[in-house]
Every structure is written in structure tokens, then in C-alpha cells.
Amino acid sequence: MNTPVCGPLPADVQRHLATARLGRRMYFHPDVTSTNDIALDLARHGEPEGTVVIADHQRAGRGRRGRVWSSPPQRNLMLSMILRPGSDARGALPVTLVSAMSISVVLSKLLDIDVRVKWPNDVVCERGKIAGILAESSVSGSGLAFVVVGTGINVNARAEDLPAAPAYPAASCFTLTGSEWDRAKIAADVLGTIEAYYDRFLRDGFATLRGAYEARLAHLGRRVAFEQQGRQADGVVLGVAGDGALRVESSGGGETLLYGESIEVLP
Image (cartoon, rainbow, N blue to C red):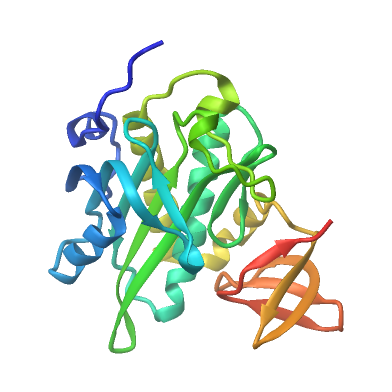
């Protein structure tokens, strides 16, 4: 088995890249608290769309709702990209969905297993969560100044590296296959796939991607619980709306649209 090394370095990623923008400008850090923090600062100082921050070791990465995404050195893939979609503030949601869908496509092909998305930001397989996304945006006037999309993918993590949370199991490419994977090649594949879907989103809107996204939606047709406006509710997932909202047929009747709420899949 190959000994892991610090990386993936920009030159190694760019050797595999087939993108026009994403990853053509890249910053690498051996050790960071959060790649999103660095990318947000760069975005505020005018870094162009497509700039990527990548790290070997992330000590205090953030997930949604204050959760922590930490990763040991030389194991996983942590990167954040700067996007400037120029849409309204809710444009950050479809950008998150496009990114999650892209990662599920890459990992499905790579691992030859069924990899799906858990709305809005998790990438999962039967054995648990493989990747997570955190999109953080800045609004300027009536539109988005930028969106930073942070991605963490469990690539070569061992079982002992993963969170010991039976209610929320995690998996990695290594635990699923027993093999080491090239993080630079995966990074290039992810950036290329995201760029292809993101460009389609910019050109035609998210509504044209609804079918592709719903085909990968892990909890389509499942009953989920959620909290909205301080009230607990549940319903059956119908799909997603043209703006990326989750469509739920509420148990009390009628359709509910979820935008930022957390959901829990019920038995």
C-alpha cells in the first residue's frame, strides 16, 4: 500500500484538469482551520470566480448548523471554491445542490456503487455519509457578490478516523473499497463535473437540472421530520422546486417548501 503524502498539490490537480475556470487559480495549505475561511477572505478581496483553496489537513472545518468537519492529514479532500453566480440571495441553495449532485456523480462512477444526495448538502451511500458541503455567501445590492462552496470528501480515511456516531454513520472511499485513492485526480474530476453542471445552471437555470437531481435524491418518497417557524412537522418528500427548495407533502395537508431547514428521515 502506498504511503500517503502531503497534498494534493495544485500542480498535481491541474495536471488532470479539463476545466475553463474552476481550479485554474489554486491556493494550497498544508494545515488550516477551514478552507472556507481562507476562500471567503480571498473572495472579499476580489479573487476571481473559479479560484480554489485546497488543504491537506483541516482542523476546524464547519458544517451546517455549527457542526464541525475536521480531517486528519494525508487522508481526505478538503477544498473551497469561489463562485460568482450573480443571482439573488437564494441562488446559494441551487449552487449547493449542483455541487452535491456533481460529487455524487463522480463518486458513483469512481466507486461503482449507488451514491446519492441528502438534501441539501450531504452525499451519501448505503453505509453512510461520504461527503458534505457548506456554501457561504455574501450579498451585494440585489444579488450575490459571491458564494464560497466548501467541500469535504472522505477519501482515504480509515474507520478509526471517521466519527463514531451510530445515528449518523460515515464512510470513505477507502472503507468502501479497501483501496487508496488519488486525491488529486478526484479533485480534478469533482471540479470538472461541478463546472459542467454549474455552467448549465448559469445558462438555463436550476429548473432544467431538477430531473437529474431528483434521480439522485436519497429520500425521494420518504417521510421526513422538520422544524419550520418553530413548529415540528413531517411529510413525504415529493422532489425539489425550480429554485432548489425541497417539496414536502405535509401530513397536515398541502405542500410545504423547505429552504434552509434540517430534515430527518423517518423509519
